[in-house]
Length: 492
Image 1 (cartoon, rainbow, N blue to C red):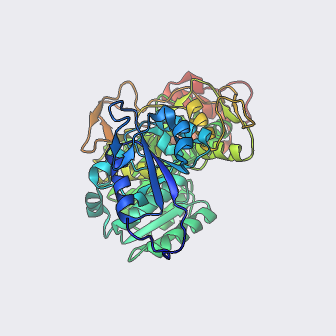
Image 2: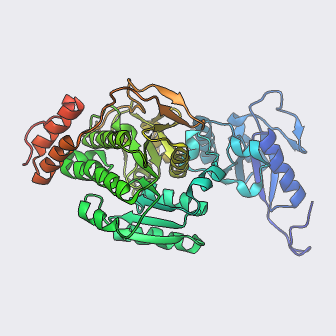
Image 3: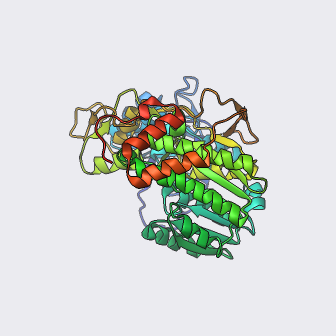
């Protein structure tokens, strides 16, 4: 074994590693450790293949299956567990994490299956288990050459650039070599932070931070005389479902009126591409937030039908892990404070993907996008919110079944505007494949709903007047959704 770089007389305590998975990934890592003299010592394999149990692989015994983890860890004096099963789903990872917790051992995970296929696995790629690993999703293979051909040398503007999705779009756009990246947002602190983060890696790209509110039509008109983006990624929106139930005026003015203002801006500056970031909550909406995002889609479709120079398109997807206001960071903060995790209903499910994955797929869709296209990101299977809460408790060292002093889980009931399950497309939307396996598109339908300028103006006037009941009636009438109509007493 190669010298680890320590003095020959110095005794080195090497981390004893129990490797779960005796397949290609596990063997590759063990061989690398043995050949390179890394400061860890593999002591045994575990594998659920009965034909492997009892054999010797890479000079290590296969001591049993995953159910034997605690016992084998004790017998071998293991200090740490390496989960080398890249094709495993979220539930298997969760079960293994629980076993590691019971054994009192730290644990790490190899890269996903796609990383195995595309190249050798290296020990430096091993990472701590994160919530996204428990979803069992694969990472996106980014077609950066195609994206560079569209972005390189052009001016790109991201609205809501200080938000979770907007900031990640900026991070992924910057390496593609735009001539200028405009960071537009309403919150000065968040725009300052993303500019400071990106500045050291901007290269030849000019970073232009702009504090502006998409509701302010005149402000955008003035900006059109100073900036001229070729590509606009419109991520600015109000997204919090319960908050927008109590503030429908803001939802309409930002999500609907703001989108229309950006469309007029795009036409004025002659933008080549305009992408609306939409949500699964816009499908048959039952909430104000979802209804206003549905209307934003309708405004974009109307613009696409009229425009010949700007490609207006929509990208729709579900929840993203780790975004501000999303359930994962909310649950993590509750666990850290020792507070129970509120789950509205045991049956509730949501679609999830990582922020980076969503941003990369948005860019992929933008590259292939034709005017009037609606792209729907492949979200995998819906995730149980109860199971997600249990996963986070496991990762934090608590038993989700109770029996310890952990925070636990409270079933609280649905909040205003919430529903048990989301859908990614309307019943009337026929989905077809695209050039990317993780992106589908809706087949254009004759007479697809659009929002006229007269209807839009009426809604914005109600919002500006603070007429909540009138605004809800307007939403319910335009979308033919009685559930959006006023309930009880509202302010005017």
